[in-house]
Length: 192
Length: 156
Image 1 (cartoon, each protein chain N blue to C red):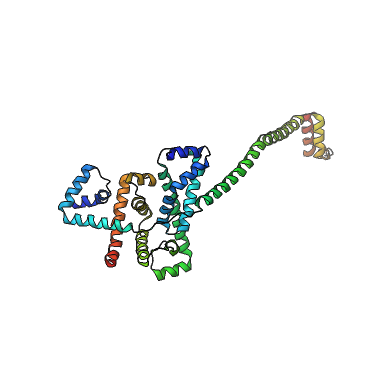
Image 2: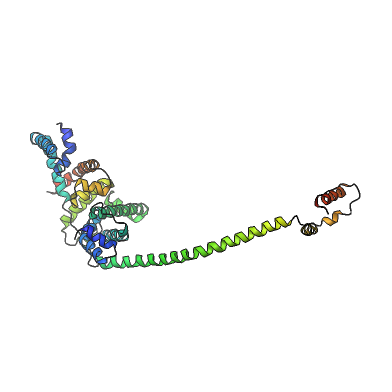
């Protein structure tokens, strides 16, 4: 059964069809949010909100685009909003300010060690470096990178999620890659 | 093609996003240009490095939690709809009562205005305003002229 068939069933109140959609996409949606937030609990909260919104808006669902495009659109917006709120909170938090001074600026989200219990310290350090590099990107560039690199979406699909043009996506990815190259090359050369 | 043009589209080329024609032009340039070749290798390495991030698994209670939230929202929605339904049912009778009240008030006011021309009503008005107190003015004074004028007008 296709996603559209399932959504049509959800539209008529079939909760089992909705459960099937959740089971198919929950991992992808959580991981998209995780790439932005770096914290599993927050990522899961965003995923819950994403599916809740999908369910509540099912009655007005129109099969214009792929379902995952719709899910990614909601999830990335919610994750970015949460990130913005977190930044504002950090601005007012003296504790965090002190932590920043010790850790160095630019960390939007510290990786929660509880999220990566099986990682070696070397791998954890690599991830932290990648996160810091991603954090330096503007929100739109980061979204394009997450959707392209981690979700394997084509430029056309990314453009649909971000509601922009394919050429704008190309330009964002080009600039993002240039920035990431500068940020990561030194670190990985030193590491290897 | 110039290096600058090639490098602007290198990212899309490496992601396999260009048409066959565009891709072959870029490929041709890159294979003959050490500078662009190095740039392509470095972008590929960066992209590969980004992949070194682990994924997280959804919690085993993801659906149970979501289902509970849906039930909560639906319950709230149902309560709101019930209140709205009750208000909708109340709206028509309340409007009729309000319109009747306004109609009665306007009707009463118009009736009073109409009756103001009747002599017995005029007596009530002059009594309530104590106009009788003006009767004892001396002849040809301003007060008595005023009372005569009023009497002429109202045939008193």
